View 1 (cartoon, rainbow, N blue to C red):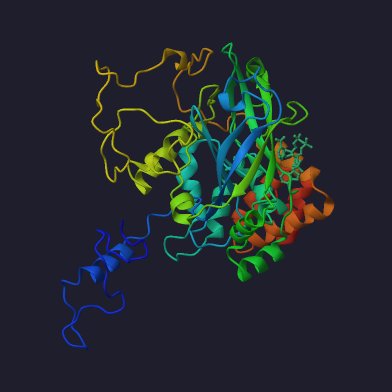
View 2: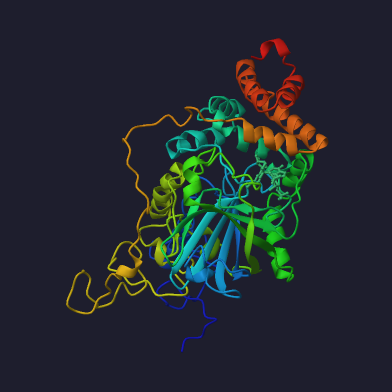
Length: 487
Ligand code: NDP
């Protein structure tokens, strides 16, 4: 057995001197044959992998999901099958628009990406801390994100691009209202809710399908920073939320969420007053109350950030029997984008990394080879199917019916804005805020829009006005826009 404290090269050869490179004479030059020097620096040069295009800055922790109520009449998913059942979980929180070293206190949605290691494979619920999103069609996602990133000429964040895009995309108004409310700057990752945002489906043992939305309600209570507090904290400690999560768990103060679901019977979806698959809309609680059925607890910090958090790969396409997708156009685009991003960022075998591979079952398939294959690569077993040599085979009991209703319509590029109400729910949110919260919202918006050209400001104020007259008037007043300029 090797001395495990002995420094070695990657090939295991003992290193005799890790302080001095090999040189001719004490003043150099160096010898190319100093392979230890070369290996060290070459390895160092390759330490970074591409950061995520979105959600680059994040923190994560392990924990579990524990079932607290019976939902088996709605879903046959094994992880939800019994009260008390526990499933290992990994949750990665993040901001969206900033780079990997950007501040945790930014005004930005927060990612809330959950991986559940079930015995039927990994189930990923890749949500945010907001119940809605800026867009309802994934074809606009690259355009939108470019407005949140840096200006191609100045390399600066660009409020004009943001408000130009938002004011030309009225479906964003609901999420913009959440973003500039106090909830746009959560005090920590522990003090915010998570939402699946998308509609998914649950399928029960009889094959009946229900539309569902997940809500993760923080047991720590919602706590937010004001704009001024966020600026101060972000300046003092760019990693405050990362630190908060780590220290809470290290101190055995485990963060917890009540896990709830809204359930819509399939028949309701046809005639409901809004499209239940529109990611810019919530389902009012009055119509579909929250049903609490589980608790999510984070109780273990990762041992190594890069291995577990940086290399974690979440994908909404990771589902298990008993759950399914919905026709939500954003979700459908994400089903492609996430695994595609991982193949680019982490490589073809990203799913075999320990954080991403199933923990409660053994993947058995015919995927072979590719860069950095280190898991045995299927050994000497047969690598095609069907075969006569006992390789893994399909099991018809798991054959999914993509949608067990008929979709019979013309293929076309349907205008998602036709007849769509972009304003009522944003107005509902404005009206439920307390007067002082409304004032902070208006002040945050005016502050963010102050450098934006007047025509774009006016266009956006018209949207606020359509959501609620007082909302529009407030922002107009704060920006010094005369009411005569508003439609
Ligand atoms: P409800 O009165 O039943 O629910 C209001 C919801 O608003 C609560 O979930 C509350 O969260 C949340 N909320 C409070 N302040 C804010 C804020 N600053 N930013 C975001 N959410 C906030 O009403 P409805 O279900 O009829 O919804 C009315 C409006 O509430 C919606 O248009 C939407 O903007 C917002 N909302 C609705 C949600 C839903 O799924 N129905 C979810 C989140 C927001 P909490 O309970 O944690 O305080």
